[in-house]
Image (cartoon, rainbow, N blue to C red; front, side):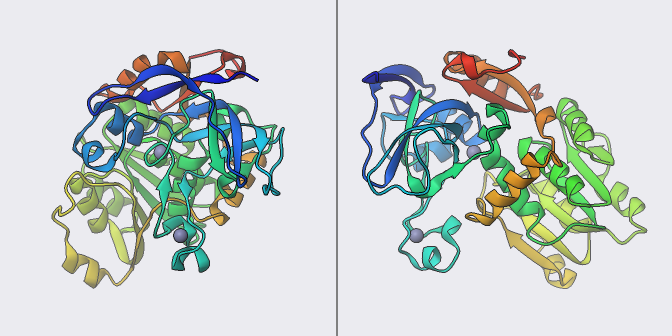
Length: 359
Ligand SMILES: [Zn+2]
Ligand SMILES: [Zn+2]
């Protein structure tokens, strides 16, 4: 086996990243070495690439390898690894739990007290090889193509937020037309929601939302979302609102569009932690308000796998671009460009895994 690999490294505390040849890392007894087939780009990677205020305060050490949403083949397993073996095609839960804090011991390891995040706190997946502890290696159904296996982590966010309570027979509003909002539309549709609204600002992405099964897309630059939702729900408001935009105005509209006693999920991240919030409306709503962080480990992963394997959920409309990892700069610029002309971009360190050509 080769001794070195190409990896996309954050080499300095500033904008950008560069491809470097570095040694293939060693594994500890509880770890596996994965030959990466595909890794998808996430908003978090863009923050790190652009080196915004969040990245400056969050990233502790450079150089390191970025990227976290990934899939590949186990090519080496440590001596105490038992659940996966060489040759398995795995994806990776990017929240790496300590396995000994209170949350880890009580079924909440997705919010582990000592959580390490792949591609943020340790070397990530925009590389030819990746090392992770066995606990986060998720064995895949190999009939699913690599670009879909790599997006199971963000799809898991959508599944966790959408299905934290049942949606069958319910009206569901998804605020925000980013990839996770688009995934949530598909999840709500596959799981029996009967009225699905999607709000957003990018016609390209709202159109993908239509393909994913939204009954009504709302371009918030042109329409009043609260009015549209109230008109369509006998003036009551929607049963479920999923806030996936991280925009303050959108969050406020969502609370106004939620029926009394409904369910609201906060998932979007706000630029400012202390954005204005209609707290009295939340109190008087009398409903259930959740914060969504990551995915349940591993309940959500079973649901994601079953939805994809059964073909009940087709997320291919969201995966708009497949590119070689070497085209990372172009990929990041596409992600940054406004208005958005991309859904999810998947990068391939070895183009032989780039099935059906590129877009
Ligand atoms: Zn991500
Ligand atoms: Zn823990």
